[in-house]
Image (tube, rainbow, N blue to C red):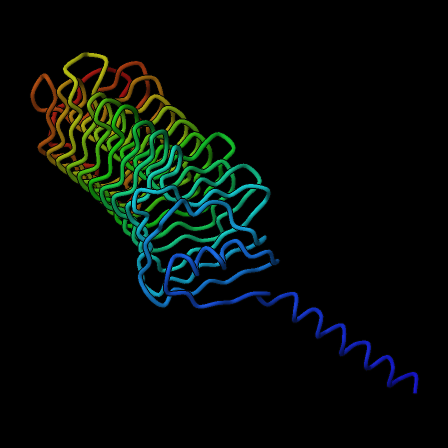
Length: 354
């Protein structure tokens, strides 16, 4: 009899454990009122499944569940210029395969992820979203697992046309295509990082920092790796594609037709301007333009290690205010290490310590 009782206890315990691991609430919705009803339901885990496109009538706001999962299956949530998602009080969020467009918020056009909260994953298409402050799509002061998708024509008035990662923010992975995103008055046409990002990969095309630095990416703190294609990005001041003032462990990519648009000796870097450390740089740098110094690269005070151990690194057709120019090195150091492949520089080099 005692063995039977013990067996029943084990079965009951397993049943409780299974129940805890499954969503407490799961519902299909096809209109915004139903979405809001489920979104504000008090429960531990909440899964909301879109079965149709929906349009917001008001800001989405803060979810009630500890973990909210939104499964889009390719459907649209049209923000109608209302506010997006606000994560507070250690909330967690997953958003999968959703088209999110036309949201308008103070910070984080679509999502404002505050300290202590976590976005486990965010994937889909993000178009025409707007932040009056930072982060046209996402403002992060907490944790982000993965961020993947297509990011088109998103805008912030200040830093980060798509993503603003604040000082305490951490991001594991950013991957996707970034096209036509804009920081109107500040830096980072697509990404502005004040915290830590482990990996960024994708295609960055026609992004702009209309009055600042870093047409595609501005890094103030730490980025582990950046890999991708950077084409036709624009910075009014410096770093047509990337502006770095701290540490980027590795950059590998194709940089073509990027522009730094300020005519001054202390500005430039048609593709990259560096004030910090780039521990490893390789790729193709073609037809980038700086109206200041450094057709492809302006190295101000930091160190750049150009290492061709994975591919040939080529500089060709880059120009600055002096004419043909691949690299302008001011007070920093540039180290060249051909490794297994050649480093080909068809343009002039100026400055010292190279």
